Image (cartoon, rainbow, N blue to C red):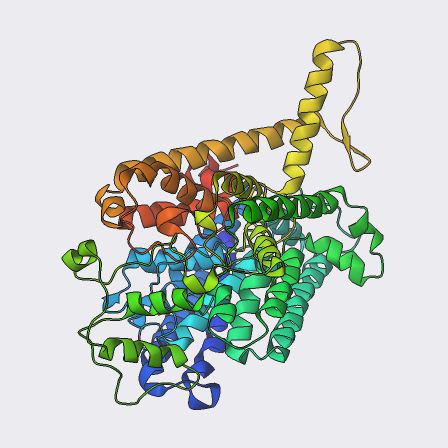
Length: 590
């Protein structure tokens, strides 16, 4: 094992992390809509974090200065796995140095910072934040950095690394281990050209989506943050109600905005190599791809079923203004001063609303909440009177948006999907496990694996009653090797085992009192915990119950947050690359 060579690569990744923090700094100033009183802590926190990243990067590069650029073997896996770990540790520093609060009056712990960072880098979208719209709780500079981590994780550090720097014969090995091994055929060009082309497609999709959102009246800050999360299929939002904010709070055309999100989430869940061929003027590769056609078929079928079930049970209700008021009440602190002396920030209507709610004579509290000294969480199952009657188009849009969001593992929300009927939740669980296409930014187990697994099962069934027939299963005109089928089925089984093991650990660690005090009851704990584990490994973000569409992971224990941080990393790198780092024989000399 050439540790100097590994160190050289890790140093480059550390420097990239530091450089990427620069783009968050301008949001602290007035010309970008910031207020120095609210943003100064975030600004200085980012500067200190950048300094540490550069120092660490230069030290690692210095240690690896004498290494030779030999073809990477085991080192490639070590570089990819360790890069994500060191990136997480460095990228979490702005949360800690800025004094960012998880909830008003509750500074982020190390576990909170690592969880939020890993959620961004792995494009999961799970969050510990109770409040996102008050810059005195979460500065805009930190909010932008939060979205930037998702941008970086979307395409993958190693692909970005190879695209920008390129390191000869080692590059192909790095990309092989960072990207999915089932990402489809690549153009017959040099590996650095492939990486650079995919990077440009990724940037291009972000630019187009930002322009589209700006044309629909969304601010540049919110457009950039939501674009980073959408193309990366991550789901971080700048609003407490996620994308549902546009329908509940603003006078914008919420329908058009949500359909725009749907389109780009679908693109984010598509194999980027196929998009490359489309740009090259050969869309036939996309249209003939069996995985992409199956991907769209599942989306349409799931949407149709959830739409029909939703109409039958009358459950396809989008977020309403009542939901917006509930989130403001939850984050408000009755004992706090109404507003800092500087007054409300530009474009911060939510800050004013919270100030008004704090000035109110009383804020409704449940009995349990009054005992704990905090305002109650809004019950996900509650429906506002104003949202009881919705049009067919709105119901269809809710169904389509949530299906696309959850299947691509983006995790944006426009409705309380966790309160839907059992049939609808069953469909949601299936599509979240499947995920998007291989070679895309989405998580899950990938559509192609299920296609290969189905072909393998069909072959075994045929062999059971026709043992004399020798037939090699094929997919999309390509013969499937037995070793490939075996590896795919092994991965799916391994994935399920890891989800179950992690769920059991969380069940043991998390106290029952959290479910009792939340009013949900201990009987929902098992289902909630399973959804938490599945959401982490599939990099979805929101789960069911205590981590539903309007909730967060902040109240979980520190140990659980560390477990889930590791789970998100395992899910993003598809289990093996991280787990081999814990194998002693892996680190031995060749």
